Image 1 (cartoon, helix red, strand yellow):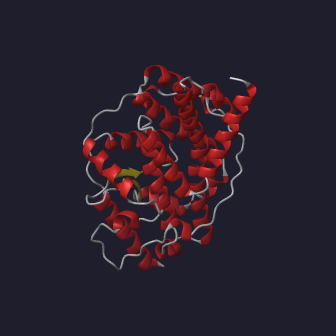
Image 2 (cartoon, helix red, strand yellow):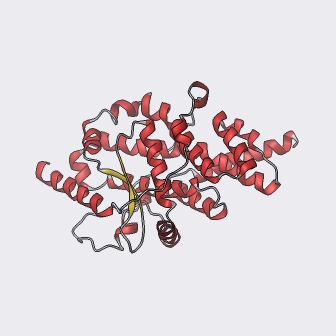
Image 3 (cartoon, one colour):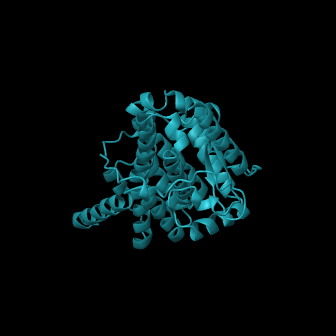
Length: 315
């Protein structure tokens, strides 16, 4: 490949990533569209589900209960935490996805280009391994591991978010009561999912990703999920799935994301290659084991009702 051709591809990947990394809705749609084209990249289905949930969490912050419990500054920091984390993951992952897509089109591996996008050595190695072996599960796990490590330093341990969000009282209350969850939405059945606990723990976040992957590997849940994401346009509001439920009409429903939030401008700081300083725990790459899961939507809704009741009584 000539330098001119390589320069063209880098320019294309950079522009395409930027144009799809505008906000929560554009990211969700980009992940979903990619999965439809390349279903062997299972991580993009997980990313679609998680991105939808990020939208739900961000629009939840505009509900009156949260406004009563949290100050304006705390709400802004929480929003920025969700936004920055998901923007950072997309800016790292999407160039990888495009390089793989181009590799398929040209029928030769182009993963050396990932150096230009500050992708970790660990992930470049894993893409080359996938190209040779077509081990879909290992690549999915590698992407889960990589993206959680990518946000570990800039967002979790060494940033303004550590002090303003992860050490705040509201965060500790939400963490203590297990108020946060990733729901895998469905149209006519209660949603399965995973409650989020100790988000600041890298091991916990990777474990959560593995749990979501395990749930989605169930054929029935997978089919329900695909049916939902193909039927329901992403809006960032829980009304996406709540409209199919018999939920008390008095419950407050958030507006769609784009009616609530402007586009956030980000600066892409130079990323450190996390894999140079620390290794990968063997358990992170262990094969998924079959587990029995139950729907969590009713339990999640009950916790939300308690939160709303608490807000009404104390604020």
